[in-house]
Structures are given as C-alpha cells and as structure tokens.
Amino acid sequence: MAGERDLGALLRGMKPELRPGVFVFCTIVADESIRAALNPLLTFREQEGTTLVILREEAEAAGLRYAFASRLITLTVHSALDAVGFLAAITARLAEAGISVNAVSAFHHDHLFVPVDRADEALALLQEMSKAKHL
Image 1 (spheres, rainbow, N blue to C red):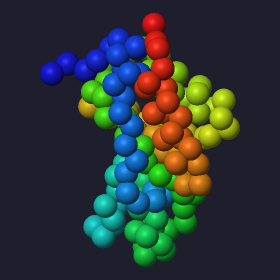
Image 2: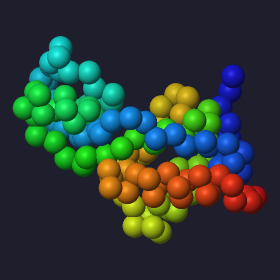
Image 3: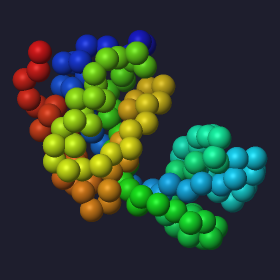
C-alpha cells in the first residue's frame, strides 16, 4: 500500500499514539560498535558520532550520558516519504505552544519525540489538529 500524500487526509488521519517509556538521546564515538546489551529504537551515524535513541533505563544501566528525556508519539497514518507539509504543519503547531520536538520519518509513519513533561499536552494538540477542518 502506498503512503498518503494529501495533507488534509494526513492531518485528519494521523491518529497520534503515545508510546510507553521515556526515551533519551545518547552519542557514542563514530567508529565504536553498539554494545550488544543496548537495543536502540533509532541509530543515526553522523561525522561527530553515532546517535542512539534508547530507553532511559538502558542508558542509565549502561552508564551512558544522555540528553532530552522524551516521550514518543507515533502518527499512525501511513504517510508517503515524499508527502509535502505534514511535519511542517505539525511542528509549527507544537512550536506555537512552545513544545520542542525531534521528528523522525520512517518508512510507514512519522514519529515525534517531545519533552516528558509536555507529552500529554502535545498529544492533545495533535488530536485537536486531526479534528479540525483542513484544505
């Protein structure tokens, strides 16, 4: 099934879900192997190092320094990777409310990491957006 490209359909059908757990962002040296004991949700290699997004308890158990304790909201609509404006509309609305967000697009869905203490508010704003009339 192809992903949705229509912005209005994406916003109406986003059905945001708050996932369990608190996630954190860690970094390891670029050429360092990821320890077998770690189970990162996300891995991204940059020149400066490899970013791992893992559960906070995993980071603490491994003695890793971390930043941005966050909750994960998954937008369950199957969005096309080349859809235009979906994340822009969402991140703009969260920005209006003063909520920071780290967005990740995967093959089937878009995922939002938002601050732990603002997760419920972010979820409510997204649910409100999905009920609004769109072009």
